Image 1 (tube, rainbow, N blue to C red):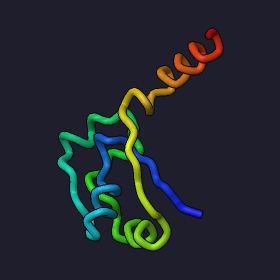
Image 2 (image 1 turned 90 degrees about the vertical axis):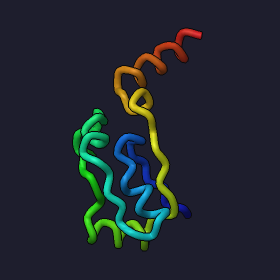
Image 3 (image 1 turned 135 degrees about the vertical axis):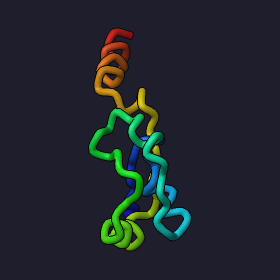
Length: 82
């Protein structure tokens, strides 16, 4: 089994950190642009990073559109009406 994390591309500090093998800090001006307000941190914490390194195989990103519940609902409706 593989564990794949997901985070917004505007706040992909965990992905960058995992791939670099060290904690990477993103500029505040960038991470505050994501609608995912719980992920607006500039860098992953040290304890979380160690868990990610140990248990996560990869982290992928999603765009703001892909992360939008309104966008997801619209996609669902359009699929049902085909």
